[in-house]
Each structure stands twice: as structure tokens, then as C-alpha cells.
Image 1 (cartoon, helix red, strand yellow):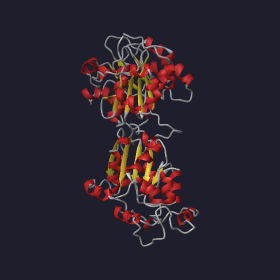
Image 2: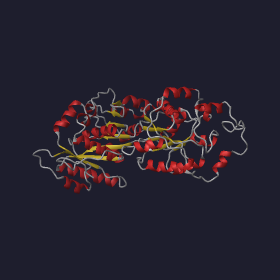
Image 3: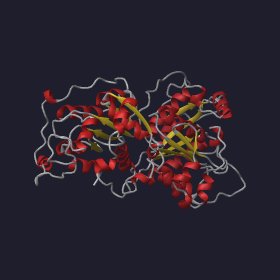
Amino acid sequence: MSDANRALKNDDFLDGDDPFLEAADVERLLLGETEDSDAGLFGEGMEDEDPFMAEAETEFEAPQAAEMPERPAIRPEMPDFDAVREELAAMPSGDALYGEVDDDDFLDQPVPRITIGAFCERPETAALIENSANDRRLAKAHVDIEMGGLPAAIERYHDESTPNLLVIESGMRGRGLFDQLEELAGVCDPDTKVVIIGATNDIGLYRELMKRGVSEYIVPPMTPIHLIRTISELFLDPEQPFAGKSIAFIGSKGGVGSSTVAHNCTWALTEGLQSDAVLMDLDLSFGTAGLDFNQDPAQTLGDALSDPDRLDDALLDRLLVRCTDRLSLFSAPATLDKDWDFAPQEYEMVLDKVRRQAPFVTLDLPHVWSPWVRQTLLSADQVVVTVTPDLASLRNAKNLFDLVTSARPNDEAPRVVINMAGMPKRPEIPVKDFAEALGVQPALVLPFEPQLFGKAANNGQMITELDAKSKAAEGFGHLAGLVTGRVAAPPRKRGLFGNLFGG
């Protein structure tokens, strides 16, 4: 049974009409200084009939709007956490509040590199979440805390992607709460999980929220360990292990710029869409990710593939290079002193472990054809094929499309990026003919800009770092939104390449 369910069953602090309890009230209850001394924290001294469980037998009824608390102001100022912490310091530990903790592995593992958005109504809750975010178990996660509860969350995500997890505090019940949750659902990404911190132990409310897709419902009083365990259970469930979405980038032939597209798209995904990602440079002999991100790590992907059985979370953290707060790089050895001949299952083992680290894993595949490349390509969640507008690219891209679509009939067709379009004096196959041959419109058409791309490569920079207003930077942001299914700013059509963005 989860902690939230135990709390719903055992917590006698609150009834259906009580507001949030302050920290001082919680302490008095724990010390037994209550007006009603017959009921203990875990039912000690209670009558044979459990009044809370009797309430569970009744049909859930939404209260009238007049009974609901006034909606909180949107985005008020953050509280003085130092003052709140003094109150929280007197609170008991998680074991004192929730009983003896089950012997599980959830608190032995760090939560993956996810993004968490917290919207609180009370300063005590905001301080508790901040304390939780500083715990070692959430060290990889990015936690943003705002005041304002549900209304602030709805306002915030009208124009941007939602994080992997939303933790929202709301003292509302009934129709008003459900109406706001429906409004939130309208702006949420499909893969976002939602945890509600509520005000009442109401089994009917709990069941109704679960029906509506809420991942968990918890009520005060709680401690950082309780919140961390709740998050861990959502992302570390052994029966439903967390796995980031894999996006494979491959070129139709050598020299078409697939690595450039992969690296810049990953940058746009992390810096533009504010989501964590790991970039794996799988071109072990000639990979350029280290150069493009101006990194020279001592340990590389080759070390992991040499002994994949030893690759645990601790070792993986040492092998990954942090390029930014959100982007980690698993670079290629880029040397010719070894053959780097590994079996497909060794690549698969390493990839499976990396996918537990972040919501997105981008795979920069080499232009070679081998069993492990085929397996990696066909097992990816999304495939991006980079081409140039010539006959060889068209033929090879058609072969790739036929293979991928026949092997994955229930998945999306690969995305196509036409790179270096409009090169002077070079005969080119029109974009329209490319689209007809492949059966899909290109996701992106990048114009031939040797100065911009050459300077970025020589400087070890991404296109957006060098010129954030360029058409190419805008295009990579658009592509990142397409392959992740997350919100990207709507593209502006302009200039000679007005069809920069395809379907």
C-alpha cells in the first residue's frame, strides 16, 4: 500500500470540512493536546467503528460553490522560507507521522533527471518542497516552486510545455476543483504526471481524482521524505520502470549533416523546451559530439560498452559529461586504435540504463549498416532521417523509410530533414519530389549557410548560441517540438525559404 493510501486510511487529523492544519496544530495533535482525546494518531483509543471508513461507503457529493475557499491570488510573492523552516523544524520525522516505513528500494535510488513544477498555496508547503528538492534523492531533478496553486499553474502553462511532474496544492473540493483540473488538463502535455496536495482525507474525493487521471493525492501533515517517496513511486516503480523517450538521428549517406542536426536539436530540446536529455554519440570512431560541445572527457561510451554489466547509476554519472544544467553528453572515443566491435545486446544494455536517467535520449547514429545500428534504429521511439536534395540521398532515404515503416507499422513514420538546400550551382531534386517519393512532407528544410554552420562547428557552439535569431535556430526549435511532442513556439514563415517547416 502506498504512503498516500495509508495516510488516507489512517489520518484522523482532518475531516471533510477542516482547513489545512498549521504546524503548531500538528504538534499539539502529536502530543495528545486535543479536545478529543479518544482518537489517537493511528486509531489508538478509537471506537470499533472507523468514522472515516464509514464515510467511504457514502457516495461522493460535490459541495456547493459557497462552501469552497476563495480562489488564491495568481502568482503571489514567494514566502520567507527561513521563518517557515523554524516552524517546520519542530515537526516530527516521517516515521512519526506515517508509521514505520515499508522496506522498499524507492529511497535507495535517485529520481531521474526530470523536471518538477510545484504550485503552492501555503508558505509551509513551499518550504517543505524546497527542502525536498535539496535532498540527495532529488539531486538530478529540476524543481521550480511558485505560489498560487492551480490558477497559477493554468496561467503558466498556457504558452509553454508542462514539466514531467506537477505538484499542485489546492484547498478546494468538489465542482470548483474539478473544473480547474479540467482546465489544467487542457494545457498539460500527455506524459505529465500530476500530484495533488489536498486539504481533506476524503476517500470519495481521492477516488474521483484517480478516475480523472491524477497520479496521486496526498494530504498534510507530511515531511520531505513522504513527498520524495511519493515522487519515487511514480518514477521508480519496478513494475513500470521509468524510461526516457529515445530519438534516433541517422543520415541517408555520409556528409549530410545528421550529427549537426542531432546536436542542435538536442540543444533546442534542453534549452528551448527546458527538458533534460542525454545525447549519445554512437559513432565510436569518428564521433564529433565532443568537438561540437567543446568537451574532451577522459571516459567515453566505449568504456561503458566494454563492460555493460558494471554500468550502474553511480558509474553512469561519472561517465556522463554535463554540458549544461539540462544536457548530459555520452561522447564517443573518436579514436582508431580499437575496432569497437560490440554485439547488439551490449548496445541495448547500455541504452536501457541511460534511458533511466532522463526524459529524452537522443542517439547520433553513424552512417554504417550493421546489426546493432538496425536494432537501435528500429527500437527507437522516433526516427529522424537527414538528407541532402540529391538522387543518392533520395534512394537511400526511401530504403530507410521502407524498412522502418514496415518493421514499425504502429509507429509514426520517420521525420525528414532536408539539409543544405539551395547550394549555389548545384542541381537539386525539388522538395516536392522528395515528399512524393517518401510519402511525407519534410519536417524541416535547412538552407545552405556554410558561414553560420562552419563558424559554430569551429567554435564548439550550437547554432542557437551563435545566432538565436537565425532561420536554422528557429528550425531546430521547431524540430525539437515535433520529435518530443512538446510545445514549441509557432514558426514564422519568412524569406526565400518560406517553407522552412514542413508538415
